[in-house]
Image (tube, rainbow, N blue to C red; front, side, top):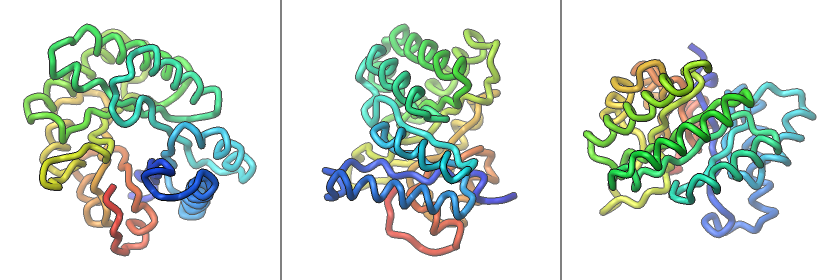
Length: 247
């Protein structure tokens, strides 16, 4: 096992959230990408605004690092048309992977038809364009039963409606890392929720994101069966260093 093959090095803060200017944020994502190339990480994951610039950078360097972006992030409630527009632009700009936030609130409220349409339509756009598609379910906002049900729901749509495409190219992903939990409780991946997802994802892959900050934590997730890990601490994980990052 080569740890870097599982890591998506992630920078998803907006300039307002980080306190950086637009140009400083661009410098940060370029630095992140250079590190990913040097360390041989699997992918970088950034906001849509930076995809075009990073596509050119990665191609100029002749790197095999994959370029991912987030869609309808972080709330997931922008609606189908917004998701379609964002993912089509990301594809045009050169993204390899599309991480959609599922409309988990609508799912919790029982409007399954609306959620199913978004999952089917958006997954099809990604898959027919040769992209990896991931659905972020925001585990911290769900009960254990809802994690099980939503994971099964996504699996059923992909395995039945989109069976002409490799189902392992669709992931169920744990977290955005931006959900505000009460009293500062963990809002990302942990062994318990990842087990629930793995037990119910069928032929779909699982990505652990949010809160994986050490080499030991990453290795534990891989041993459980995840195929990818999203983290802002990828460099520290590979080197075995400690980090203060919270994603």
